[in-house]
Length: 185
Image 1 (cartoon, helix red, strand yellow):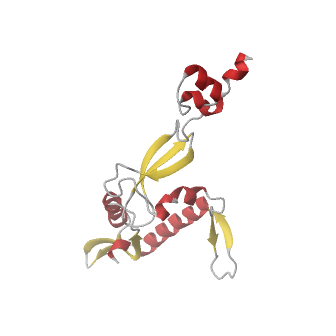
Image 2 (image 1 turned 180 degrees about the vertical axis):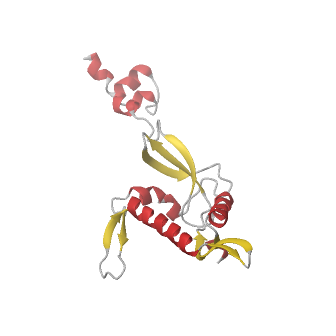
Image 3 (image 1 turned 90 degrees about the vertical axis):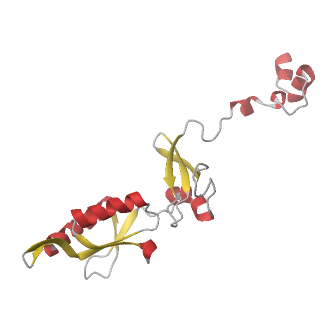
């Protein structure tokens, strides 16, 4: 009988004192509760939406995304996110998210779905084919080393370091002449 009574919060309050708002009011289920991010690892990231660059904390556990929240240590956003940034978790986990690419073959009137890996391979192959086809090694006897038929337009969420690496890769590595960023347009 004492065991049954000891599970009743009012009885625990009478025996142990307290005002009914502390441990005496907790059930075993409440004591067993853990924070939703308990045991999750954290990776710092940047919101993918606009050019502001708000900091985000990406929580993951066992290779699975758990949550995305604002980073209080970010000097830009100080832990705050706009409605779109606050929805970043759903952007990645929504059941209706597209995971395949729509592709229309040349001269076709129908779209087909292909896997993302295949689509990325197709893009890489086409970039390399275009470079090989249009690469100019020299002009008027002087080294030129350009692929004038390709261009790159970067997104607004790229930071300075990423833009630097893109500029180096695309101009020195591939020979692109036109490399710009959407933030300049």
